[in-house]
Length: 382
Image 1: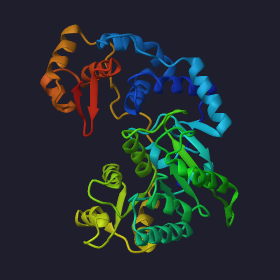
Image 2: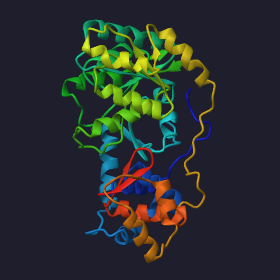
Image 3: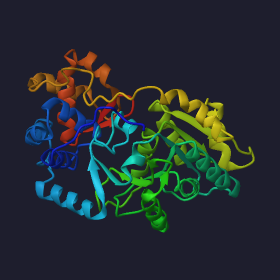
Image 4: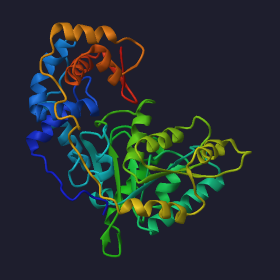
């Protein structure tokens, strides 16, 4: 099992509060984590949201998810067999839980045991060649026989080929929309087969399939949701194998995210004459491990399996916020911000104040809908 030794178990009240917090306006995974760290509980954070947003200059009252809406979402999910799990709870993929932007609550449907096993991600072209589809199927089957769960995005092409080949050994579909909004629609039957496989078994170990999503029920996937989904594919895995990807392919976004998350990146070489292999060939030039058989992946992954998974639910800074920055400090920090992204470390230095005060002002601006966070610790005003 690819699991953390110590697990948590939320109370029903805390699960409701956490759901309300993440479903409220202007709160993403990182902001959620910051609020939880600072206030100690989602309930306490919910009480402070209006004041924090007001101090950040919100143009209108902040929309906060009601308890009734949260209970309604939980009840609707239960009817579909969806459980909302927090990082550290049994069934929440252990490696995904280590990310800074791990979903605060993950909608899980299917085999809990499969979600706790080591995963290899497989992604690639939606318009895949026959050879690419055949290789993806063979690789997924071989990796499954080696004891790995295959995780992918339920897309056309390479994704669906990898899923179908690993239904018997365990596969996880990561959804860009809600659990009741499957994309593409023609893969509803494939997802049903993945979920139905949870009663199968290999040896003494229960296996099967599962689906995960961070989106609420009823959420139709939009273009911007697919990169968010891709970070879950790479984050839950030990490594990502890219089978056929053209330049500017979404699969290359997944590979980049995998590298940023400290995951292994693998690529299957292809003909220089086939545009569908241009991206994978470039990945190999940039240092991705070349893959021609499952043994190439297994050899690279085996040493990682021996390392313990360390889950920290708190930030490294023991004093991340200051409860009440002075008006002059807040004004100075806001004046240093603009539409061009700036590093938070540079902002702290230029403001001449403590990191705690800067972080508090940034949180206030974010809750007011006035701040955008970029990758690499960059922020800008909206």
